[in-house]
Image (cartoon, rainbow, N blue to C red; front, side, top):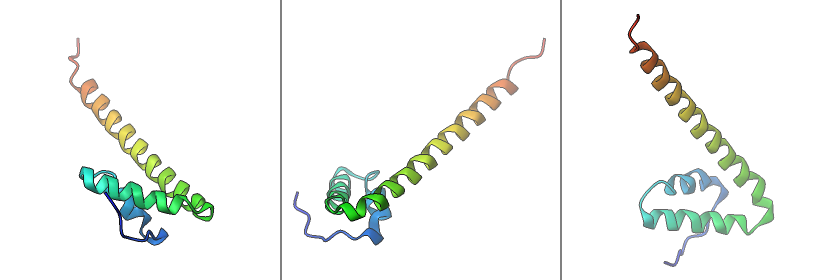
Amino acid sequence: TQINEIASLNDIDDYAEMLYESVQDKIKGSALILQLARNPDNLSEIIQTFYTEFLDIVDQKLQLNWLDHAKKSDQKPFI
């Protein structure tokens, strides 16, 4: 698959979203991110974007685990 688009740091969030879509979108998103990563000046912005996204995912997972644990503890019979 050839990408005929020039990547822009302004669209990095869109490229990151593509990584969760269809296989074609994943390929396109990763190719565009790779274009940006080839310029060392862009690396700090790329790292910040993905670090923030990673923290959001971890936060969501922790909240879901907490809710699941709270539901299970409420379902235990009192003896």
